[in-house]
Amino acid sequence: MTARKKPIDRSKVHTVPARRRHSKVAVAQEAVPHQPGGSFNDFVANLPDVLGARDYREVVAAWEKAWSGNKTVLWGLGAHLIKVGLAPVVVDLMERGAISAIFMNGAGCVHDLELAMMGRTSEEVGAALDDGSFGMAKETGARLNEAINAGAAAGLGMGEAIGRAIADGNDRHKERSVLACAARLGIPATVHVAIGSDIHHMHPSADGASLGATSYRDFEILASVVAGLDRGVVFNVGSAVILPEVFLKALSLARNLGNPVRRITAVNLDFIRHYRPQMNVVDRPTRLGGKGYSIVGQHELLVPLLSAGVVEAQAARKTKKARKPKVGAK
Image (cartoon, helix red, strand yellow):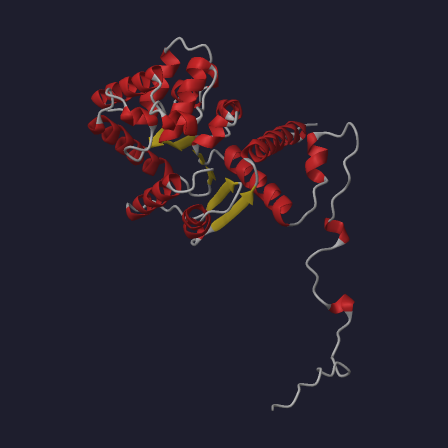
């Protein structure tokens, strides 16, 4: 039999003074309780200066700096962002000039159109799949495919083609459409599809050549936007696969053609961490400079919080600039 091990002798443990040890958190970084009647800026200032709250402040600061400096702010939108009621927030940011370009997956244009057209979207997939009616909404398929087919004939990208169709139409809720707003403001808005992944691809009016031509044109437009992303900010909000993959290729193409896209602030927002957004948006694109952030939480909370933060930061900058005395003024 082997001898039983004796308990380790802790009598000779070497200790160090606590005050000389490095500590990652101090009381100066702690949160301040919110007081009734406090402003949004008070709320942000009172957040703890650690982890996610620190990342939040840094992302807002980087975004506001890019906005004020007329640098590119590119937002990637998964369809879920539109589906959970955040299109008006994105539209407001575009109208303020806080977003200079957007790119989305194919499902994004489905929800964007339906909300503009009917004021509602998102069907019960399971029940509709049972009887084969899932994705068979007549007007949705017809209007999207009509816009895409016309866009292909005119040499447009998918985003612009659908955006123009909504903006020029009589839909009751078109003012909250992300794509219509982009078309109205002349902001690049691109749609990146996987053939067969979106409901209108099943309809008889769908044309594979048109889908491919318009979405490929949008890839070229996106690459042109990414070519000017140095010192800018890119957001990926809720796309786990398509947009991270497309963005990575657009970045590689832009750099291959000699564009110095190095210092990027890259931000991924989602309620869980996925491999491709972390690698293809946050980590790999920022190897040459800039910084990547992954902020975890619900879109319907994170997007309004970030939006309010950057709008307030921009307003504070303008107020400070207005109060600054002019050189030579008495």
